[in-house]
Image (spheres, one colour):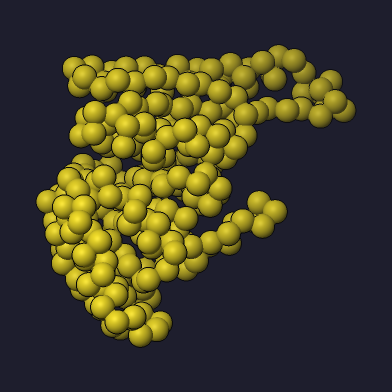
Length: 272
């Protein structure tokens, strides 16, 4: 993990997201790229006269001001950390810009959408980037708290392509974690012979010792069980597959994926 991308903005949660990004960059001696995106402000020709050039310029200036504030926050937080950073400020579609930059990163760090924060006006961005970027995404809760990604990691496993992809993408962090638990909730099929042991063996070959846990409770949604168990074992990172697809920009996510994005209490590393 040598190239990390983090989305920055003027939301209240951005500071915490940057701290986690820098902690990760320090742990892996990685380069951190901070990306600020000002949404394109396109005015139809028929509306240019009623809106007026002064209003259009004021909106664009507000975007530049927000970019400057975010850059200043980055500069303040990186002081004395020894983290190599670069700054990119672009104007355009948020999802397309994030995906384009994520293509050249090992992981993209995004923020959970906070509907109570007026400066966080981009619902649906994380969902689209998860499906379209082709890179793992570390989604950080908007709750302001400190997290140690290298303490206890909880890996959600169900034998699917997505969960296998997530395990592979999380290997660098899992190698450094002090404790790793593999959790299988309400399997919809009988696990293949020795499947859990095969995963344990795979991870052990990467120097990772894993505890295996299976939970069965058909009356509680899997997303709630996952978050509850994460709290029980004091996990500070959840690793799981992101289930869903995009059809004409309509996000169609699996129930557990959507539940985690809405109710996460610790950072979640997701892969699609």
